[in-house]
Length: 185
Image (tube, rainbow, N blue to C red; front, side):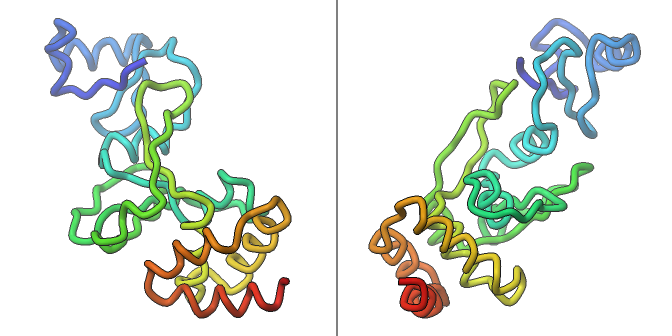
Protein backbone atom coordinates (compact mmCIF):
# COMPACT_ATOMS: atom_id res chain seq x y z
CA UNK A 1 0.00 0.00 0.00
CA UNK A 2 1.21 3.43 -0.90
CA UNK A 3 1.72 6.09 1.70
CA UNK A 4 -0.31 9.17 1.05
CA UNK A 5 0.61 12.78 1.59
CA UNK A 6 -1.99 15.56 1.61
CA UNK A 7 -0.43 17.16 -1.46
CA UNK A 8 -0.96 13.88 -3.36
CA UNK A 9 -4.60 13.43 -2.28
CA UNK A 10 -5.88 15.02 -5.50
CA UNK A 11 -4.35 12.14 -7.48
CA UNK A 12 -6.87 9.86 -5.73
CA UNK A 13 -9.72 12.26 -6.39
CA UNK A 14 -9.95 13.63 -2.86
CA UNK A 15 -9.22 16.98 -1.32
CA UNK A 16 -6.96 17.51 1.67
CA UNK A 17 -9.96 17.99 3.93
CA UNK A 18 -11.57 14.76 2.70
CA UNK A 19 -8.28 12.96 3.54
CA UNK A 20 -8.43 14.41 7.05
CA UNK A 21 -12.08 13.34 7.40
CA UNK A 22 -11.19 9.85 6.15
CA UNK A 23 -8.48 9.72 8.81
CA UNK A 24 -10.93 10.74 11.53
CA UNK A 25 -13.38 8.08 10.37
CA UNK A 26 -10.68 5.39 10.50
CA UNK A 27 -10.12 4.79 6.78
CA UNK A 28 -6.54 6.11 6.99
CA UNK A 29 -3.94 6.09 9.75
CA UNK A 30 -1.68 9.04 10.41
CA UNK A 31 1.91 7.82 10.55
CA UNK A 32 3.47 11.23 11.07
CA UNK A 33 2.86 14.85 10.13
CA UNK A 34 1.79 14.74 6.49
CA UNK A 35 2.11 10.96 6.03
CA UNK A 36 -0.94 8.67 5.94
CA UNK A 37 -1.59 5.00 5.13
CA UNK A 38 -4.82 3.11 4.53
CA UNK A 39 -6.07 1.57 7.77
CA UNK A 40 -6.24 -1.88 6.18
CA UNK A 41 -2.61 -1.74 4.99
CA UNK A 42 -0.35 -4.58 6.15
CA UNK A 43 1.81 -4.00 9.21
CA UNK A 44 4.96 -2.01 8.49
CA UNK A 45 7.71 -0.19 10.37
CA UNK A 46 6.45 3.37 10.62
CA UNK A 47 9.92 4.74 11.44
CA UNK A 48 11.29 3.29 8.20
CA UNK A 49 8.32 4.68 6.27
CA UNK A 50 8.76 8.14 7.73
CA UNK A 51 12.51 8.16 7.01
CA UNK A 52 12.03 6.97 3.42
CA UNK A 53 9.21 9.44 2.80
CA UNK A 54 11.08 12.42 4.23
CA UNK A 55 14.37 11.61 2.45
CA UNK A 56 14.40 9.27 -0.57
CA UNK A 57 18.16 8.80 -0.07
CA UNK A 58 17.74 7.74 3.59
CA UNK A 59 20.02 4.81 4.40
CA UNK A 60 19.89 2.63 7.51
CA UNK A 61 23.34 2.67 9.08
CA UNK A 62 25.46 2.03 12.17
CA UNK A 63 23.80 0.14 15.04
CA UNK A 64 20.43 -0.17 13.26
CA UNK A 65 22.05 -1.74 10.19
CA UNK A 66 24.24 -4.03 12.31
CA UNK A 67 21.08 -5.17 14.13
CA UNK A 68 19.33 -5.72 10.77
CA UNK A 69 22.27 -7.90 9.64
CA UNK A 70 22.14 -9.65 13.05
CA UNK A 71 25.73 -8.70 13.85
CA UNK A 72 25.05 -7.12 17.23
CA UNK A 73 22.96 -7.81 20.29
CA UNK A 74 22.58 -4.07 20.89
CA UNK A 75 19.04 -2.82 20.52
CA UNK A 76 19.11 0.70 19.14
CA UNK A 77 16.89 3.18 20.93
CA UNK A 78 16.37 5.06 17.66
CA UNK A 79 16.68 4.26 13.98
CA UNK A 80 20.13 5.30 12.68
CA UNK A 81 19.74 6.85 9.24
CA UNK A 82 22.47 8.36 7.06
CA UNK A 83 21.97 11.11 4.51
CA UNK A 84 24.60 12.92 2.43
CA UNK A 85 26.49 15.70 4.18
CA UNK A 86 25.03 19.08 3.27
CA UNK A 87 21.47 17.75 3.06
CA UNK A 88 18.80 19.24 5.26
CA UNK A 89 17.92 17.06 8.23
CA UNK A 90 14.15 16.67 8.20
CA UNK A 91 11.95 17.16 11.22
CA UNK A 92 10.47 13.82 12.23
CA UNK A 93 8.13 12.47 14.85
CA UNK A 94 9.77 9.04 14.84
CA UNK A 95 12.81 8.20 16.92
CA UNK A 96 15.42 8.71 14.19
CA UNK A 97 19.06 9.65 14.64
CA UNK A 98 20.11 11.39 11.44
CA UNK A 99 23.79 11.06 10.50
CA UNK A 100 25.55 13.09 7.82
CA UNK A 101 27.99 11.01 5.76
CA UNK A 102 30.41 12.39 3.17
CA UNK A 103 28.94 12.66 -0.32
CA UNK A 104 32.00 11.00 -1.87
CA UNK A 105 31.55 7.78 0.12
CA UNK A 106 27.80 7.87 0.74
CA UNK A 107 26.98 5.18 -1.85
CA UNK A 108 29.80 2.84 -0.75
CA UNK A 109 28.17 -0.45 0.29
CA UNK A 110 24.65 0.98 -0.13
CA UNK A 111 21.75 -1.07 -1.47
CA UNK A 112 18.02 -0.49 -1.42
CA UNK A 113 15.60 -2.88 0.20
CA UNK A 114 11.80 -2.90 0.18
CA UNK A 115 10.09 -1.86 3.38
CA UNK A 116 7.95 -4.88 4.38
CA UNK A 117 4.25 -4.10 4.27
CA UNK A 118 4.81 -1.07 2.04
CA UNK A 119 5.67 -0.28 -1.55
CA UNK A 120 8.50 2.02 -0.44
CA UNK A 121 12.23 1.30 -0.48
CA UNK A 122 14.94 2.43 1.93
CA UNK A 123 18.71 2.30 1.67
CA UNK A 124 20.75 -0.13 3.77
CA UNK A 125 24.51 -0.36 4.19
CA UNK A 126 26.30 -3.69 3.75
CA UNK A 127 27.75 -5.52 6.76
CA UNK A 128 31.27 -4.54 5.67
CA UNK A 129 30.36 -0.86 5.50
CA UNK A 130 28.61 -1.02 8.88
CA UNK A 131 31.61 -2.63 10.56
CA UNK A 132 33.97 -0.08 9.01
CA UNK A 133 31.68 2.77 10.16
CA UNK A 134 31.52 1.30 13.67
CA UNK A 135 35.31 1.32 13.84
CA UNK A 136 35.77 4.80 12.42
CA UNK A 137 33.07 6.26 14.69
CA UNK A 138 34.09 4.20 17.72
CA UNK A 139 34.51 7.30 19.87
CA UNK A 140 30.80 8.04 19.53
CA UNK A 141 29.43 4.49 19.34
CA UNK A 142 31.72 2.71 21.77
CA UNK A 143 34.69 0.49 21.10
CA UNK A 144 32.84 -2.78 21.67
CA UNK A 145 30.24 -2.36 18.93
CA UNK A 146 32.65 -2.68 16.01
CA UNK A 147 34.76 -5.36 17.67
CA UNK A 148 31.77 -7.55 18.53
CA UNK A 149 30.24 -7.11 15.06
CA UNK A 150 33.57 -7.99 13.45
CA UNK A 151 33.89 -11.13 15.58
CA UNK A 152 30.38 -12.29 14.62
CA UNK A 153 30.92 -11.42 10.95
CA UNK A 154 34.14 -13.49 10.83
CA UNK A 155 32.43 -16.37 12.64
CA UNK A 156 29.80 -16.43 9.87
CA UNK A 157 32.46 -16.64 7.16
CA UNK A 158 33.07 -12.99 6.32
CA UNK A 159 36.08 -12.33 4.10
CA UNK A 160 38.61 -9.92 5.64
CA UNK A 161 39.78 -8.85 2.16
CA UNK A 162 36.29 -7.53 1.36
CA UNK A 163 36.17 -5.66 4.65
CA UNK A 164 39.61 -4.13 4.08
CA UNK A 165 38.62 -3.01 0.56
CA UNK A 166 35.71 -1.10 2.07
CA UNK A 167 37.72 0.22 5.02
CA UNK A 168 40.47 1.53 2.73
CA UNK A 169 37.95 3.89 1.10
CA UNK A 170 36.72 5.35 4.40
CA UNK A 171 38.67 7.72 6.65
CA UNK A 172 39.95 6.46 10.03
CA UNK A 173 38.80 2.87 9.48
CA UNK A 174 41.66 0.84 7.99
CA UNK A 175 44.15 1.00 10.88
CA UNK A 176 41.78 0.04 13.72
CA UNK A 177 40.26 -2.78 11.66
CA UNK A 178 43.71 -4.18 10.82
CA UNK A 179 44.60 -4.20 14.52
CA UNK A 180 41.34 -5.91 15.42
CA UNK A 181 41.78 -8.52 12.67
CA UNK A 182 45.29 -9.30 13.90
CA UNK A 183 43.96 -9.85 17.42
CA UNK A 184 41.03 -12.01 16.27
CA UNK A 185 42.89 -14.25 13.84
